Image 1 (tube, rainbow, N blue to C red):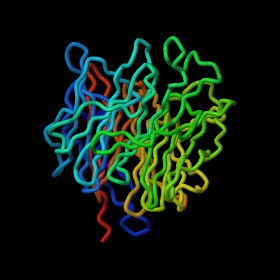
Image 2 (cartoon, rainbow, N blue to C red):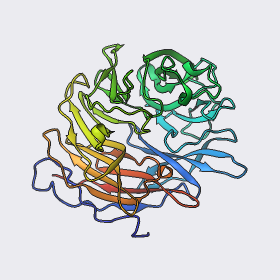
Image 3 (cartoon, rainbow, N blue to C red):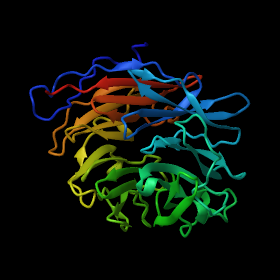
Image 4 (cartoon, rainbow, N blue to C red):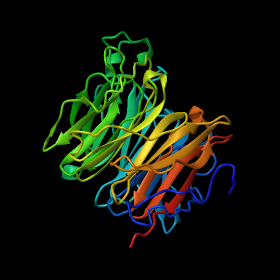
Length: 410
C-alpha cells in the first residue's frame, strides 16, 4: 500500500466516557474488488449485518457497468454485475446505490440518458430476488416521461416489504431546450419527489415532497422508530440554500422545514448535500455550508425522530470542502467524514462528535484530491466494524476501501 494515500493507526475516540475512549483504532486498507477504471462507490448495511459496496465500472466502447460486492470475513466477495449500458449518465456527484430487503432481495439504481440534453436522464431501478445473481429489467420510479433531470436518489427498505425511493425531479423544466436548470426562469423549479417500489417491480404512491429545492445536491434518508427522515438542500426564492427536512411520522409526511438557518445565500448549486443517520428516535444530520463566505461542516442531533434539533456543532476545521457522510456508533456518538482542502490537494478526514458537544481530534484517513473526480467518500458500519470507500483520482481512477474495528468496551 502507498503510504502517501493512506495512514494506518488512525486515532478515533469511540466509546463515551470510559477509560478506553481514547484507545487508537488501526485502519487497514482492504483490497478493493472494483479494480482500475472504477468510481462512484456507495455503501449500505443490511439488517443482517452485511455491508454492500456498489460502484460504476468503465468498460470498452463507452459502456459502463454497475457492480457490487459484499464485505465478509475482513474482505470483499467476488464482484457481481447488476447492469450494463452504453447510454448511462455517469457523474461524480450523482452516484448509484443499492439496498437490501429483510428477506435478502436487492434493489439497485443507476442513471441513464433520456434525451439529447446534457442533463436529460432517468433513474433506473432493478430488482434481484436471488441475492444479486439475476436482475430484472429497469424500472422508472417517475412517470412524467420528460427528457429532464431525475437523480440524486436515496433508497431505503420500507414498510409493507417495499423500498422507499426519493429523488430530485426536473420535470418542471421540460419546455427548456436542454432540459436543465441552468437556463431556467424563477417559476421553473427542481422538486423533491418520492414513491415506493414493491418486489414485483410495481411503483406506488408517487408524490411531491418539496416544490422548490437545490438543483443538484445529494439527498439522504434514514429510518426512525416510527417512520423516516429525508434531508436535502432547500432553495428559497431569495437563493438561501440551507438544509431542508421532511419526515414520515405515524403514517403521514410532514411539511418541509429548514433544519437550521445558516442563511447561506448562493446563486448556484454547491453540489454538496447533507447526510443523515438514525437509531430509533435518535437522529444525526451532517452538512456543509459556506454562509458568510466561511466554509463549515456542521452536525446536529435530535432526540425526537427529527422533529427538533439541538444547536449545530462545528465538525470541520481548517478549510473543509464538504462532501460529508456520517454513521452513528453504538453509544450514539456520530462519526463524520468530509473532504478537506489542503495546499497539496485534498484529504479525507473523520471526527467523532457527541451530542453534548464533545469532539475528538480530526484525523486524516487518506490523501485524496479536491477535484470533482474524487467524488464523495462513503461509510458504513456493522456492530464494531466500520468500512469506508472512496475514489482515488488517476488514469484510470480506482475505488479504494479500508476498514477498522471499534474498541471493545467490556
